[in-house]
Amino acid sequence: MAEYQRPTNEQELTQHFEQLKPYMNPTMAYYESSRCLFCYDAPCVKACPTGIDIPLFIRQINTQNVEGAASTIYSSNYFGNICGKVCPTEVLCEGACVYNHQDVKPIEIGRLQSFATSSVINNQKQLLHPAPANGKKVAVIGAGPSGIACACELRAHGYDVDIFEAKDHPSGLALYGCAPYKVTNQDVLDEVAWLQQQFSFQIHYGQAIQTQEQWRNLESTYDAIFLGTGLGKTRALNIPGENLENCFGATEFIEQVKLNPLTAKVGKKVVVIGGGNTAMDAASESARLGAEEVTLAYRRSKAGMGAYEFEYELAKGVGVKGVFNAAPVAILGNQRVEGIRLVKTQESEGKVEVIPGSEFEIGCDVVILATGQSKMTELFSQIQGLQVDGQGRIVVNPATRQTAHSKYFAGGDAVNGGAEVVNAAAEGKAAGKGIHEFLLFN
Ligand SMILES: Cc1cc2nc3c(=O)[nH]c(=O)nc-3n(C[C@H](O)[C@H](O)[C@H](O)COP(=O)(O)OP(=O)(O)OC[C@H]3O[C@@H](n4cnc5c(N)ncnc54)[C@H](O)[C@@H]3O)c2cc1C
Ligand code: SF4
Image (tube, rainbow, N blue to C red; front, side, top):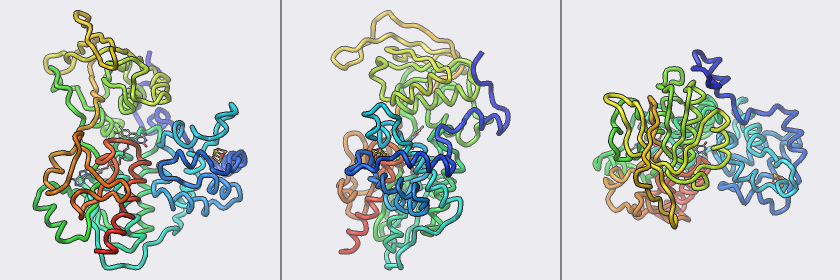
């Protein structure tokens, strides 16, 4: 019998998706902040892509200056609360904490960060302010972490900002992708609503910018344009049976789970193909939604998986089983998925080689492909002069985030090829600065 049954109401959902990093209460935050050594040249700061002054905000929490702590965090990272919950802190700030060298549990930096930031969000504190209007305006395409961070930075310099978002809600994959046991939808939406209240920027929902004409209109209306469009749909594997009913892309499956967890389609026997963090999430979420058997199949060895070790441990913790050195050959079934055929593999000098005659089948009613997201090359080809690299990523000057077309700047997954919320937030903010420096002289 599987550990989790299919949840039937909100209460059961909350139990199945219990928060991994729940909010601390003031006593917990005081105690935890007391443990910090306030290191000079702190390694935790160097490990943070947004360079938050971690010892400073922890000291501020410890001296009961929670608002000051939130101010310190938001001065470096506009997604302070979400990042405190979804960042892979184990390999970033907390992984770098000096306590690790002494066999002592590292400081819970992520939870302290969320403690301070949630306090100003919940109390609707006015902490950040737009600068007086400077008469220039910027269009931001995409209301994901990179786009929102860019918009905040631009408002802090006095630009008028319009965000154009294809979907009905803000936050991109922070809302539609990040696992529900890491952050709740409410927490994600609350932080963006708070930022919007601080800086008053416009988000135009249901506005996908796609055609050459739309891009030209924006170019003539705005002084600069930021591209924070992220990545596309799950890449196809191009094997037989991929179009059968109940074969889903992982990001599309996870989006359903995030939006409609009680009605999302979850199989009884699920096979997830892939070895990255998204594969781990899709497998864990299937198990927590009541799938009886969840198998992760990866074409390389366990050591070759791209997923963080703690993500695989999390998946194993809810009953997911790993099958390694197994590559998919075909998805089986007539109209809908009935199984999957795999072939055993071996690795030679880093290359995956199929072992002839070693095919085997696993019976299942759902296959989830976590085979990476496609790039938006078709979209970018509509913008004349924009340069993309061989892997479909927008090419930017890393210091200014300016693209080959001087009016366009870019950041987040569309540039880095797919990283974390914290990277998108850092790059969006850097692009806001880059646009400001560019427009000062143009
Ligand atoms: C399943 C999954 C789980 C993840 N879990 C984590 C995690 O636990 N921790 C973590 O730190 N990171 C996680 N990530 C990664 C993280 O969510 C992304 O790196 C981050 O959201 C990227 O931000 P972005 O702004 O570049 O793009 P996105 O978040 O993808 O936002 C892009 C936005 O642009 C909009 N858009 C696209 N094209 C257009 C257009 N033509 N016109 C208008 N709007 C458009 C989209 O609708 C979207 O809202 C996860 C990703 C996935 C897929
Ligand atoms: S490394 Fe650890 S102990 Fe040192 S400042 Fe950072 S969180 Fe505090």
